[in-house]
Image (cartoon, rainbow, N blue to C red; front, side, top):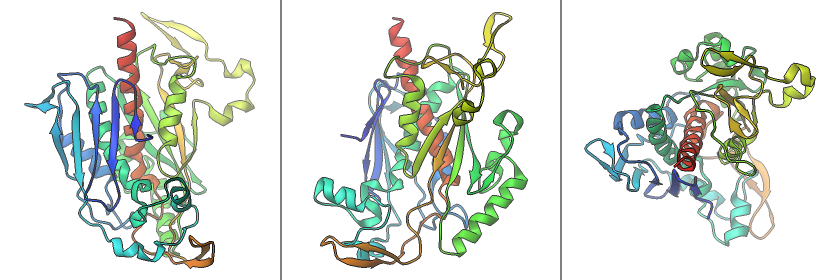
Length: 358
């Protein structure tokens, strides 16, 4: 339970941070989708550790192996199995917390729920698992590329440093030109310097990733409990360290009157559109054809290189010392994860909508 996502385009992820490998099995991918291995590998490279001074220095190449479901470069319609072997585990870095609970980690809750936990790097609770999601999400992107759907996420905030412009006023092509993955070069440098200062002080900081989905067909979403934005929210909140999700006008929308917030319709040639898009491309839980945009808030990484007070399994007071290799800020590497989860949702709902019309 809990390791399966999606109804038709469905993934099951497996593996632990310090186990032999992690991976995913995709069920429901239609036959005939061109599978570009280089594209999948590039998506993983955007997420992998050791990219720069402001990311964890764990060295993983994250080479993906496709074990099934692809023949002569296209999907066969059968389950696609993806495997990513772990190469650079340093389990000894975690021996000191075998019997201790790290503040704001899953140590205590896993121990209480299962009666046993893999303390090496957090085991199944580690963000290492998200590499499998990125690989599966890359295949969802390849499927949706065939129907004109695209995904772009970027870092819009780190700590108090926040972009003031909406995505429509930014050149999103600049996102991958810097280590922070912020499309504003000047702000990206400020964010980088701040994250580096936080790293040097042996602390961590949070931030926001903004996601944009374009080319979504009208009609995706299943009211009332499976609204499109509800599924996107679930997808984003399932990512490690995520504390918040908003789409469209989000919390800022409460400051407006209805007359200001309503998106008026107009006839744009042979297509009905809205003059504004405060709805964020979703109305009544169903896509309306406009851009879907949203924000995902990530907390500061819980592992810090400072001593903290806690307790052990016996409830005795202990000191937890910070060790291991960790990100001072997770948002630069979270960008492809956000895109992947969005792609998995849209791929699933696209196939559901297609099934409903048969």
